[in-house]
Length: 602
Image (cartoon, rainbow, N blue to C red; front, side, top):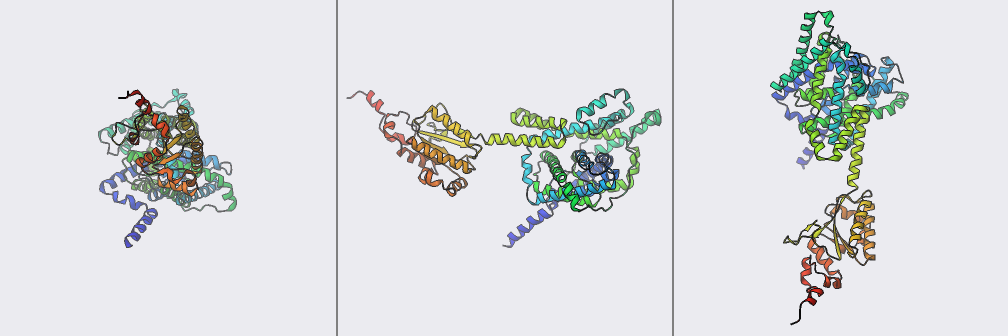
C-alpha cells in the first residue's frame, strides 16, 4: 500500500514538476552543451526581439522581455527538451492585426491590451492542458510537421535576404512578394554586406563540417563582425556602410499588470481564443518536429500547461504573447542543446546580455545575423523524411506538399490548420473504408488456417469474410457495398461467417447493421455467425440489446468450434452434390453423388 501511494505521489509530482523527468539527463557534458546553446540563443534573441516587437506594434524592449521569463517558465514546465518559447514573427503579426483596431500601436493603451491578451491566452492554454486536451496534437501528422517545417524554413531564409544585401523590403509580405522586392532592387545591393553574410555562412559551414560539436554559430557570428570591421577599414566606414543591429535598451523586464475589466475581457475574448489555438498549434508543431529528430516522446498536455504558465508569467513581466519560436528552437537544436536547461540559460543569459552587451550590438552586422539564420533554416529542412514520405505514400505526400505550399503562400496559422484538416479528411476516408476480405481454409496448411487466395475454392453455402477496421456509422455503407458485391457473385451462399478479430470498435449504427444482416440471412434461409469477437465489442452488442437478435449460439470463440457447428446447419442435399470438400468436417460425408454415379458397379 505504501508503495502505491509513493507511486501516485511521484506521478503527481511529475505533472507539477515536469523537470523531474529530464533532470537525470543533466551531467557535466550536457551542462556545457546547454550553456553554449543558451548563450548562442541569447545573442540571437537580442536583435530578433527588437524586430518582432516592431512587427507587433510594441516598444522595442518588449520583444526582449517576451524572450526572458516566458522562455524560462515554458522550459521548466513544458514537455519538449528543445523547444524555446518567445516572441515570433507569426505571433507578432497576429497580435498587431488583432489589437491595432482597438488602440494605436506603441501606445500605453495598446501595451495594456497586449498584456491582457497575453494573460487570457495563458489562462486558456493552462485550462486546456489541465483538461487533458493535449491529445489534440495527435491530429498533427508527421507529414504536416515536416511540410510545415520545410516551408517555415524557406520563409525564415527569405525574410533574411533583405539583411543579406541591405535593401529595404516592406514588412508582412508573402514569400513571393519578399523575393520579388529583393530581386527588383538588384542594382542597389550592398556587396559589402553580402560579403559579410557569405563569410559568416561559409565559416559556419566549415566549422560545423570539421567539428559539429563546436559552437560554430557564435564563432561564425564573431567572424562576421571581424569581416565587417576589416572591410570597413579597407574601403572606409562611409564607403562600406554595412548596416548593423544598433544599440538596444539595457534593462530587466519591469513588473506589469494586465487589465481585468469586463469590457476588455469581453472585447478580447474572440481574439484570445483564435490566438490561443494558433499559438498552441505553432508551439506543438515545432516541438513535434524537434522530438522527431531526437526520438523524444512529447506530452501534449504538459506542453499546453507549460505554454499557458509561460504566458501568464509573461503578462506580469512585460512580455506579450509568446509561443514556440522556429528561429530560436531550430538554433537551439543546431547548437547542440541536450535538455531544457538550454532554454533556461537562454532566457537568463538574455537578461545579462541586455544589461551588459546590448550597447555592443551597434557593432553586429545585420548581414552576419542573416547568415546565421539562413544556416539555421537550411538545417530545419528534413530532406531524409521528405524523400521517404514522397516515395512511400501518395496520401502522405499530398499532405506534405499541401502543407508546404500553404506555408509558403498562405498565412502561417492557416497553413497548419489546412494540413491538420487534410490529415483528418484522409484519416476519416481510411477509417470509413475498412478492408473486407473473403477468406477460405487453406488445404495446404495442416490446420487449414484461413487465407485470402482467390484461386482456392469456397463452400457453396457458407461465405467467410474478415473485416479489418472499426464498424461505425462512417464505414457501414462501404461494408454493405462490399458484402453485396460478394453476394451477387455467389448468391447461393446464404450463410455468412464474419471474422471479428480485426474490429476494435463498433457503434450503434454498426450493431444495427449486424441486426439487419441477421434478418437478411434468415430471409434467404441462412444465418449470420460471428467469430473471434473482442470483449469490448461483444459487451457493446450485449448492452445494446442486439445479442438476442444475433443469438449467443451464433457467436464463437474458436475457428474449429465455429466451423463444426455451422457445418451441422448446412443443407445436406447441397453437401451431397458438392465436390469442394474444403472443411475437415466435409471428409465425414460420403463421396459426392455425381462422383458415385461415375463409378461403374461391380
